[in-house]
Image (tube, rainbow, N blue to C red):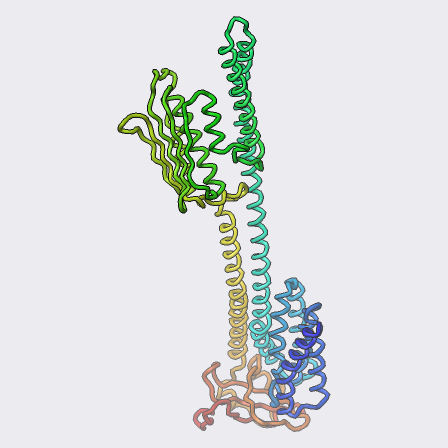
Length: 527
C-alpha cells in the first residue's frame, strides 16, 4: 500500500510539473494553477476505482480553459493534455464500458462548444463551429485513440486468459474422453477373456479333477492329472490378474511374486527340460525387468510348443550397463503336433517391447539345430509411460492461434477506428471551411462600390451570405459601439488580404484592406 501511495504521489508530481511550468510562463493567476494541480491530484487518486471520473475531471478542466482561451491572443494552454492521454488509456485498460466513454466524450465536447459561445459572444458562430471541429479531430487522437489502445490491451489480456482456460478445458475434456474410451476397451477385452479363456480353463480344471479321482488310473496318471488341475487353477488365477489390469487402469502390470528363476522353475515342473544361468546382480529398471521376464516367458512357451522333448537353456547376463538374455533350445526331439502352427505375433510383440526399452532382439534358427532368442537391453533403459490422460497436442495450439488472431483483429480495430473517424471529421471540417469560404467572397468591384456613411441595411444587401471564419489575426480593437466583419476577395487558399467593414449607428464607418498573409496587399490587388 505504501508503494502505491508513493507511486500516486510521483505520478501527481510528474503531471503537475508541466502545468506549473506553462502557467508560470504565461503568468496565470495562482488560483488557476492551484485548481489545475488539485484537479490532477483528485484524478490520480480516483483513477483506479473510478477511471472515467478521473478522465472527466481533467477533461472538463481542459474544456473550460479552451472555451475561455480559444479566439484570444494569449494562446491555448495544453499542459493538461498529457494527463488526458494517460487517463484515457487507463480508462480503456480498466475495461470501462463503451457507451459510458462515448457519453462522457460527447457531453464534454458539447459543453465546451456551448461554454465558448456563452463566454465569448463576440466570436462568430461559424468560427466557433470550425474551431470545435478541429478540437473534435484532436480529441480523436488524444482521447479516443489512447482509450482504444488501452481497451485493446485489456481485451488482449482477457482473451489470452480465456484462451488458456478454454484450451485447458478442451484438454481436460479430451483426456476424459480418452480415458473413458480406454476403460470401455479394457472392459470389453476383459469380458471377452473372461467369457472365452476363463471358461476353457475351468473345463480343463474340471476334467483334470475328474481324472484325478478316477480309480481306473494309476497313481502316476492321477498325479499328472493333479498337476494339470493345479496348472489350470494357476492359469485361471493369472488370467484373473490380467483381467484386473485391463479393468483397473491403476493396477500394476509387473508380474507379482515371480522372478525369472520362478518362471523357469514353474516351466520345469510342467515337464520342460530347462536350466537357468544368471550372472551379475545389477539392478534393472522396472521396464527392463518386465521385458526380461517377458522374453524368457515367450521363449519358453515357444520351446514347449515347437521343440517338444528338447532341452532349453536360459542365460541372463547383467554386465556393465547392459543385460543380455539368451534362450536356446536343442530343437524338437518328438514330432510336433500339427495344431501347433506359428503366427509370429509373439516374437513381433517381443521385438516391440525390447525396442521400447532401447534394446534389440534377434530370433532365428541355429545352424546346428534348434532355435535361439537373444535380447540385448540397457539396464536403465525404458522411458516413463505416457500419461493415460494425455490429450492430443494440437488442441491448445489451435486455441492459442485463435486467441492471437482475435488479438490482432483488436489491434487493427483500435488503430483503424480513430483513423476512419478522424478522416470523416477532417473531410467534414474541410467541406465546412470550403462552403463558408465560398460563401464569404466580396469581389473587389463590390467592395469598391461601398461608401463610408452608407446605410448598414443597404450595405448588408450587397454583402455575401457569410463572413470569414478565419479572419486575419491583426492587433485591431474596434472602438466601443463598432461591429466589424471580414470578407475575402477571392476563393479560399488564394488570398493574401481581406476586407474589413465596420458599422456603427446603422451606417458604414470604416472599410479597410487587411493583410492576411506574408505578402502585403498592392493597389493592383485591391482592385
